[in-house]
Length: 428
Image (cartoon, rainbow, N blue to C red; front, side, top):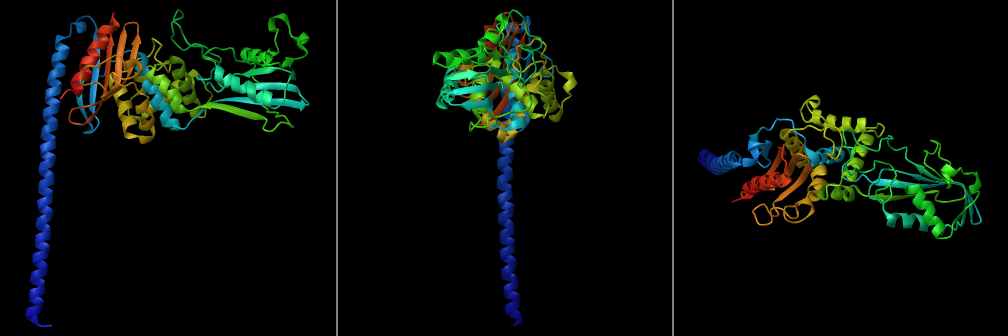
């Protein structure tokens, strides 16, 4: 190859490389200018929103006689957007359910079922069953009359018309406490039993009655005392499981999905459902399902997020307790953690009430920019009104926020203030 040819090829390669480098530099310059422009727009949005929130707080007569804690976090930009008394410890009311739900979802994911198990422990001879039918509670708050009818139908399908034995209500899944820590005795509190039917602790009684209604006879009732006049025991069955040798299957289950439980817990702010999730969070840590262990599960996630759990008080899973003390900053941290974890967020977000659309937000923010753009958990107990969740800003950014109004005598005043905050978050 001639020298002139080599020089020509080298010159061509050099020119090509130079153009490529110029294109790369040009692309970098374009992207850099877009980033700068986005940063400027974001800074402007933050500044304008801060000014509006400052004005809202300054002019709110509600705050002359009550306290406010507020935090807003830009999830898209991953930066704090606004904070006001955000580290003050306050009673969260039902926004406590956010900590309960996120903790349980972090431990289980969304595929954890709430199960009630029916066991045959005895022998079937012809149409007579000798032994116990054991109902093992899994603290399924959704178990209802329709589910009970299914149990009766399953028992009848195998041909039983006579029972020499007991209906055993096994409630050993959880501790024996029926109320949460710090609950007011005169409130309409849910019953915390591991085995419920239509929210009541009458499972064995109902099953016996419905079996009798379809013609099943309970024999040898003379051995029951006057105080225990039906063939029922509420004591846990022995740890050893003795399945019926001639009944296959010897057990069957009824289940409700985590999403079913979560939806009612959040959209309707159902306290019983929240406490069931609370107890199940304890089980996920391979510890007995006690209130103490459930509280430990939540505190463990608080520590995981980088906060000192001893600086907060977790008393129950629903927020009914007046012993709960959290901060808007901590609530926002849990919301941020859920946002970053798909296995949590995919189940949490659909469960939250939507402003102006459903749940406890159905009648709020209907005629504002927040309509359909806010998904959040409400909270109300005496003196407290709260709201925490997610909002979509006019620039498309997703925001996490937590608002706690404490010392509020009229709940509507707190709700109106929260609605005004949400409207500002979503207003173009």
